[in-house]
Length: 141
Image 1 (cartoon, one colour):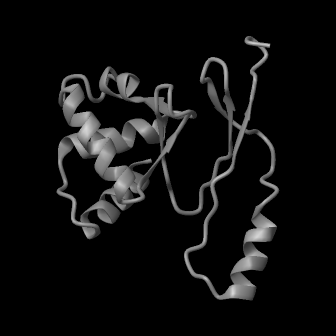
Image 2 (cartoon, rainbow, N blue to C red):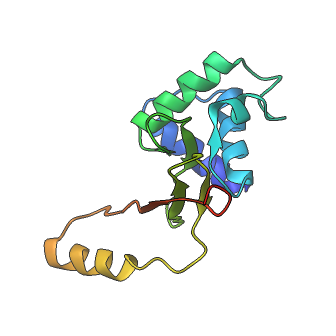
Image 3 (cartoon, rainbow, N blue to C red):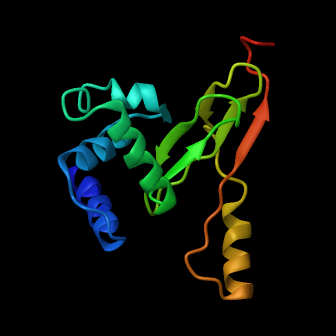
């Protein structure tokens, strides 16, 4: 995990961001969880609660999203969830339209082969996709 944190911080620096303890701790927090997290969850996490305030976490999330380091998930009228984009790792998500619950899909991605074909046929580089499924979770149904 430390290697991925360092690689991600290096990506941030190449994109013009300053290396700060708060940035490192935010990246480490996103890496150690198996699901996307809200601003509140991140600000209250054990790594960040003593490191910075909620406004700083918010500003970091905004910059990381602008730079393509993290992905914002969720329905517009609900709380936003954030997940780290790590090269070579990929997750698709299920999102409940009633309560806003977000969880990773535990199945092979059906789009990877199509992505490879598109890359070969078009010559596009750094091609990626984001796949979200919307519906009603078992609790809300």
